[in-house]
Image 1 (cartoon, rainbow, N blue to C red):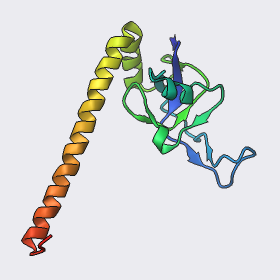
Image 2: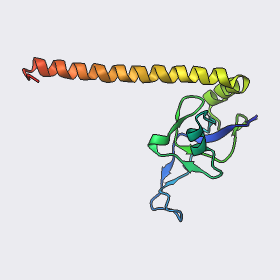
Image 3: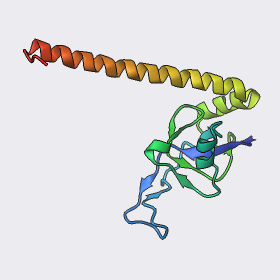
Image 4: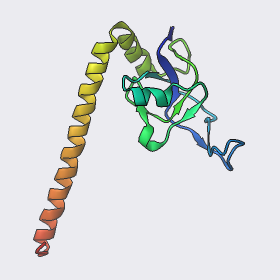
Amino acid sequence: MKYADTRASLDHYDDLPEPDERGEIRGLPENASPVHSLPMPLDPDARLRVSGRGIIFLDSWQYQRAACDRLIKVVLPMTFNDADPDSCEGCRVETGKWAIDAQAWWARRNRRDETRQRRKQEAEESAVQRALEERRQAGDPD
């Protein structure tokens, strides 16, 4: 089934040996599987970045998350098709849930993202505390 308001996407690309005719240094990978589902973001700026007509290579600060939660680096100019044998199993499941109730799906996604961000911040704070403790134990007054 093809899902309107999604894009087929990839979590990787190949580096080209030299820029192509448009100056692009990234290319479609030789092995373009798995194909992920990118539900169109609710944020208008993010939506605009991934809704172009051609192949879109995202920069690291633009990466989006696929329905399965993988980071997306390439957006393809077609909708996600769960009947494609190269489609991601996790994306097939999550896109089905998204199609039933997109608002609830986005609410769950946002909660997961908040939890991920909180854990990342806690880990960074913990690393700083460990480093300070190691410096104290080593006799460093700062």
